[in-house]
Length: 302
Ligand code: NAI
Image (tube, protein in one colour):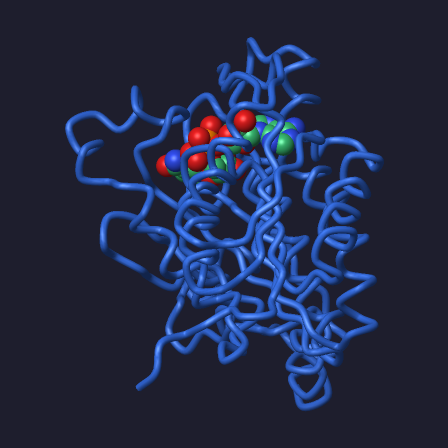
């Protein structure tokens, strides 16, 4: 089978000045994509800024014969998002791929979380993905082609101490991706979420002895596959780290039904908890409509 290529495709990768984003950029560029290497160039907590990080990655791509242009806008404002997409259009004439990867950390236990720590994290992760993806999505709709990735996290999908701000932002991204998958379907636009695990400046102190076995380059292969033309997977979530890649999903259990026109009482819930909690025979709805359609015959028939 032939290699997967990205010739004539244009990719925006946010936060691509280091860590995971850099690996996505290097891999896509090595397979022919023209890449906008966006990075604010600040500190892990979102303070500061600089041009060096994005520039170094672009130089590395160019030295290897690839095409890249740096962008230093913050993803966290509508103007920043527009600017990033404009960089792609001005330099390469289109945008096919958006990898929302920029991120910061402001970890605090919930009781100690200050409002600025909530806002900064929501701004970069959650609003940042809105601000970059929306102008790109408009182009994708017109050209009837697009591939979108959001970078979620186990901290949101599964929960993690001290990360209410980050976990909420990351699970918010899953919601964004799911709706983009639904809205993008008729335009050949896919959207998927990854929950990566890798040693980067954000995590090197958190991963303990496993850190050295978790190379960020091990995440890029999945991301590149998901944004390739031949991949039509959409509305999915993947855990990816080390060399393991695994589907994560939100399943709907069969549940317990009291009957059409009836109202479950508090005691009904207690008495039927086992059936409510039973995961056997679960389904994975592709949309809220999907869930509703599955509920309709149950309501009619009981
Ligand atoms: P990193 O710190 O190396 O990469 C994040 C990049 O985003 C940095 O280069 C930073 O300068 C850039 N950035 C921050 N704020 C920005 C803004 N407002 N505008 C543009 N760029 C900005 O860390 P890492 O680990 O590579 O993180 C990449 C993504 O993966 C983040 O979204 C992070 O939350 C997520 N993630 C990482 C995990 C890991 O194990 N490394 C685990 C789960 C999620």
